[in-house]
Length: 218
Image 1: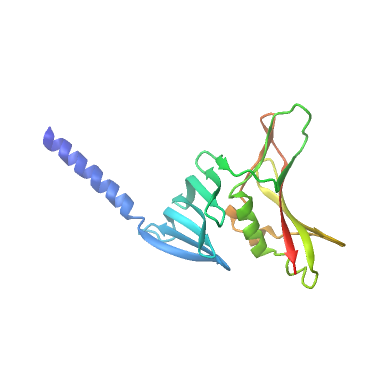
Image 2: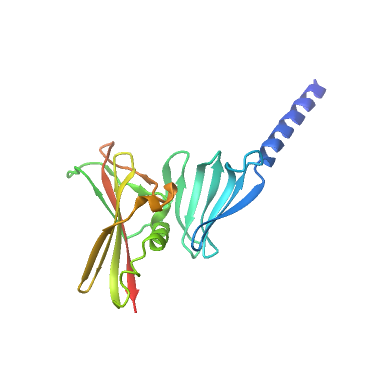
């Protein structure tokens, strides 16, 4: 009996080691200027992310978590450049476990009446991470060249009932200046546009997440 238990333990240990050792190749990928992704892949298939991963901006970690067969799983943490956690999102349960309160984010949900029970939509990855990505893909600085002053930049994510982004709009407003444009969603990676839908009385509805920040042009 003791011999049998020892054999079973050995088989289990070898199996666990083999599974773990299949995810030991570390790779990196330049997502775009100053954005770097580092991740582990399966030895048996180097196209499959499996294990720890992190995203860096200017060599500072802004996201970390785990992949399983190319899918993000369990807790992912998203950070400010200071290292403080902005958001913890669980990809397995599809729930936000922590989010830094941001006064720069506003929400609009369709068909809301007084007394309705509301669950706001979620920009997965946090507002700060969304601003970093948007500023690289569609920076208003180019349009504001030679227009010194202070501006408010608002990026609006229009969501359907499933949380899919159907339109992405950027509005820039300043003294004697206003410009609104539609941003091409194909310029983003799928995870950069990932959102959870908003709910009214337990029913998913169309909604909008608007993330704003201030910009100074000298």
